[in-house]
Length: 476
Image (tube, rainbow, N blue to C red; front, side, top):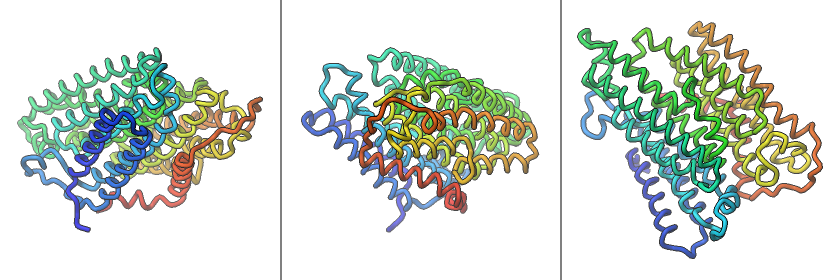
């Protein structure tokens, strides 16, 4: 098969999303669940096609479209990452459909399911554009495409006061972060005359350039990206938004938005890494994020809220990799985080419909559904970093990079906070296997969800034993 041009992938996803929206609008009698299966099939075809895209790093003197878009190996890998994430999120949305229906009393049995499935496709296209962005203007456009889609998704069940509050907080704080991003881009352009990341290197190296003004612009951009990756002290929105949003949307925010944010951060950091203040800024942010995320997670009793603080904590571990600028370690950790987080949320969606989202609602789950309990066990021990799971190797590569760079403070704080993680993740395991519960009804799991959860379990364990496929993915 001949190679495919990278931008065709995003175009295909956008067209798929628009087709599903049109069918939803004009084919009223169609079984809306078919739209979800169509979205999964379409995304799987695009994912298959992505393996035939030939990597082509953009030279610094490129002009036109290619001056702000790149199809290097990092971009192609994270396009595939976005597609896989979206496929699993759409599967979760099928399981979440009964909750969606109950949020619109008096509506038809399939009301709004088409829009709920189409919006993640537009978000996916934004994620795919964003990981290829090598110009600040294109980064802004990609971020806004993602954010606008999330505005609607977070507050989709708008008659729920908690969801409405989450949507309002996300809207206000996201708009504030966008203002920081635009202001930072303006400062950088004013100081260097460039918005292209490849050309910023030369501009900053120029002795006549105003590196102080450019650094100030970078700080503003870092504030905006800190919001996207849920890093302290810009994480204030995370717990309430994660708890209030529909659970599949929470999973998507936790995995997709974070991964794209880190790819952008890696690209933006490259021109500024020669400035001594840059590494100190990221180091302080990493320490704050590690401490806040893990300590705040300790007293949580609601599982969605616990996973929200867990998301902040994992942003801290990823920032250790950013300080050391180890792209392979960051990439592997993000893949591990994708597997174990989606696995946890997939189980949460199914169980929460029968009992609830509190950790105590998982009491005795091992007796009611051994399969779901085992799946959540794998998710929790991987998030904690138990050996022979992807989460353990992810932390190992991050800490190994820190050891090579002699980042003693990050290593000490990181190891201590890993101990905190064992406490709050294993609370869920204790509830499932050691706590008793009067409920004895079995929890049904659909065939598609059982296949998806099984795939996540196998991948989590396999990557914990044999990580080479991911480590080799970015080799030239």
